[in-house]
Length: 132
Image (cartoon, rainbow, N blue to C red; front, side, top):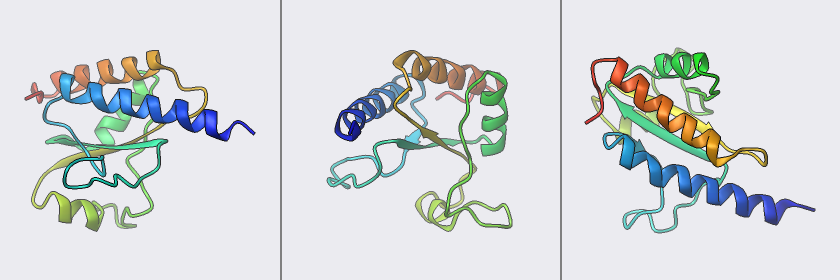
């Protein structure tokens, strides 16, 4: 009964988060985002898949978890052997990527997203000043 309202709120949070990321982490990329090349932007409004060059996905997950932020580096297309997904390898050939999935829900707040963005910046600064 609250689906439309919740979808609207979650979509607004996703848009907010994705608009903040380039301001703080210019080297990060958001996959499947609505762009000129991808005008349909067909994807779920409750997930952002974020790719950060030159840092390990699991390290990002551990560092964020230590700050009370739950994200995932796994997805349905993640290989069982632990290697990066074929899709990410195709999109970003030869790159060392930190790929994480951020999920939003009805209880997610802007403050939580701001905390996540701040934490990502701290982590990338901690590991060799990776912010470029």
